[in-house]
Amino acid sequence: MGKQKIMLINWAPIWEGARVGGGVNLYCQQISLELVRRGYQVIYIFSGFTYNLAPFTYIRTHKPWQGIDCFEIINSPCLAPGRDNSGYPQTELKNPKIKKLFQRILNVVNPAIVHFNNIEGFSSDCIHIARQHGARVLFSLHNYHTVCPQVALLFQDKEICYDYQDGRRCYHCFPHESYWLQRVKRGINSVLAATGNPQKYKSFIKGIYNGHRVIMHSCAEYFHLVSQRIQQRTLEGPRQGKVSYSSDKSKTPPDQEAFKWVDCSESQEIGPLPKENPEIYSPYKLRRHGMIKALNEAHLVLAVSHFVAQKFIELGINPDLVQVNHIGSSIGKLVDDHYRIHPTKLYRDSTLPLKFIFIGNAGSYKGLPLLLEALERLPPRRRATCKLFIYAQHVERVLERIEALRPTLAELHVHNGYDFNRLPELLEDKDVGIVPPIWWDPAPQVVMELLANNTPVIGAHIGGIPDFIQHGVNGLLFQPGNAEDLAAKMCYVLDNVGIIKQWRKHIQPIKTIEQHVDELAIFYGV
Image (cartoon, rainbow, N blue to C red; front, side, top):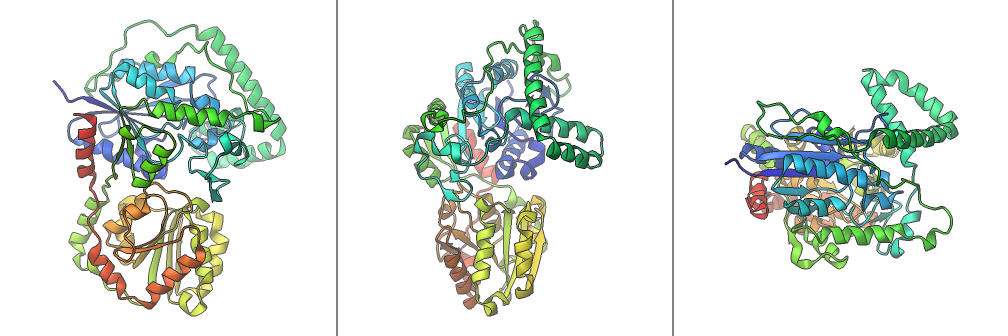
């Protein structure tokens, strides 16, 4: 008898790692590969990512990736990432299309464990369906999407949302774009990608879009109506016939047609929120209550930090279901391999000018603008003793402000993102990492990556960061959102360079992905 089948759920393609879906997707990739290495049958499902011009929702069977069976829901009624679907909260609770497709996959694959790492791109009733199917259901809380359509509990990307006012505030958080307009745009992008030279046509399409936005909206609505007519005529019911599944890679994969056709006659119309009197219409309140109810149907809810556990218990999760479980990372193996060749760099000395590094995303919620403000507040003579290294996706958003600092810094190096496998090389000569999020960051993996490379951290005292950074022991904590306090902490380090070596000595080894999967195996009951 083979080992049990484990199904992992997220919204991004697993083979993309952190490039698409960030740290959560990287985490799914790492634990999936380790489970496969141990002989488990791993099935990965993602949804809400790929859209084409087909007028129906269906399942695509991808080729197995490194021993992982991969299935994708194409043209999902729920867009991912979650904030793209924020204008349609009702679709994320009970969605007949997703329900039928998800049930079909469960029937074919028959997993013993279903581990949700996100519900983005799916609907919350998938949790109930998985449990009803007889699987052991776990849900890892990597972010706040289940209680916040914007994902980060950050109002307008500027301030923490302490009170969502029974959902009324969600309506004004940020503009909501039409689902069908987004779907058409994504469908066009997929067609352009298929040409092999998408840039050749993108400027043309962009010009049409900008010049004829009304026409684009009309096309989207027309596409919606046509899709409904086609579904009524063709999707009279699931095709008959027995579908079999085997993880044996020598056998043919599940029949693509077995997943394709689904009876969507129960589908509810996808429509935008009413624009009149949103104060008396609170679908966001219903969404939050529905998501909490769904989470309480899981057998176990894993919180990635103590803060996340406490926050979700306050919001209504049964405390008996919640287990704090810090995730592991495969960065440890990369570090071991790198410093085996360069052992002296692990306990390197620090001298002025100091090398500060920021890794992550250039979005305001991750705090890069806050770091730039802190640098602007530093006295010129202190700033001249700083070398700044930025590895951030979408860095072009703040590039002008970054470049304005160049003449006043000892050195400035700016890169659009980074390769996870090159992290030890990037960090081997850096002195201090800066992690300044302004949101309740649940458990930023960048903290683990910095510590694994023996790089002390100046981090915001927010979210899950205090689980890993002890103030004055392996780094410093500053008041979240306070650029002046961050600048003060940087000044302290610049005036006390010797403290960095002391911090390095107190950095503890991070949890490896192998150790983490040992814990997951206990939670899975396998």
